[in-house]
Structure formats: C-alpha cells, structure tokens
Image 1 (cartoon, rainbow, N blue to C red):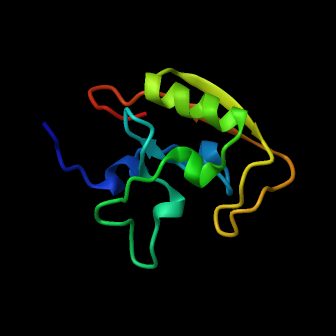
Image 2: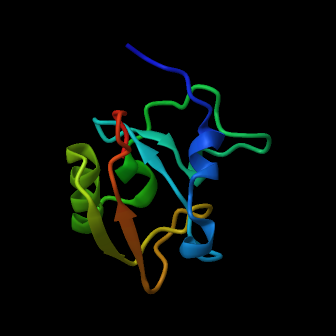
Length: 111
C-alpha cells in the first residue's frame, strides 16, 4: 500500500535552526533509495516521481556512506560522521566532515 504525502510536509517538520545554514534534510526508503534530497531538487521543485537514486550515488561511495545507508535501511537512530563529503552541486569531495543524524519516521517506511 502506498500513500502520497507531499515532500514539503517532511521539509516543514525539519528543525532548520538545528541544521544550520549548510545543513539539509533527506528522506530514504527502506531499500536505501532517496525520496527527497537537495540533489533531487529541480529549478521549480522536487522531482514529481524521483528516479531510483541510491544514497551512495549522491553522497559518494565510502565506508562511511555505506554505514549511513545501512543505518537508514535498518531504521536505526543515531549519527554517522562522513569525512570529505561531496559537494552537492559539483559532486567533488570537500575538505572537512559532515555529521548525518538519522531517525526512523514512525508509521512509515522512511528514515
């Protein structure tokens, strides 16, 4: 069974003040495919029906992003430190690190 829920409802629930100016939210399905992510944003809005894009396709394939993807698939709560994360537009590694906090969205198949 599926339910259509506008992505902006999830985005409005994001604690923007806690994310900071460079923070962002993302949603992943139970199989690690992205439901919403800044990389899926078009000039107008999110893609109507996002393509089957894996988290690692966007955030890079590292041991850290594999750990993050696995935590999202399992619906675990916690955080993962990703060193040298990818720039979302240029898709090149950045200096520094990014901390991803993750939690399961109760009553859904999303993390």
